[in-house]
Length: 329
Image (cartoon, rainbow, N blue to C red; front, side, top):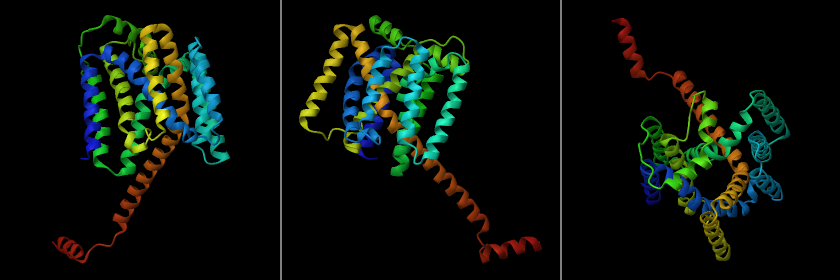
């Protein structure tokens, strides 16, 4: 196991352990302290890669939409804005022809119609896309894609460990007591709508931000941030001019300090900043989904070809003789 992979596994286990012990406090601290550092460093990294868009100027529209969405109070309209941004980014970054773009657009229209007829579906999408979908599902996509590209058994085991940690939290939730009541209240205020959204999505009644869901959110958020930081040597997000790195550090610390100075205003700023980095990452997310789909297709085709080759391969002389003897017997 490489040192980087060992550190990676250690951080994953640390996030799991702390999420099990102090879920409410960890969720808020991770979001407020680790979050801004992740947002600013990733935006900086995406900027140097033109946000994986055909034209960098398109990112300005995504930033404007993110800031406007942070001020939208209607949950359905907020969800619609998230959906439109995701579809447009997928069309721009993950399609290779006009035909593919048209097919994706038609599928998106069909899914939007289904969500519209189901009443609160856009609101559910607006809650889950920036939270669990972004920090957990897309994280899993990148981990799986990285393991496939590197053909690394260790990285594949990290994916397994991530899924096992989530399973343990869901099947054997912690019974942790709230140690800092103000943090727990803030966590419920900011993330309390995730429970009802999951309740409507899966048809499970009365889901709330209990210790099970809070521990899950605390783990996936914390690991999402730590997973980004540990990849500094892999994707080189820290390879920027020192002046920019210093500006990122100051902006991150300032965002965190703003929350502790005035948590209501600070959370509004953090929400806008979080949505900005989420929307700017949508093109990369879409591209990663396409690449993972291609990898899965290659794997399936390889298995089919291997199976066909095994069936059509001529029998070895020794095997033929043995078969003849069995028939004679």
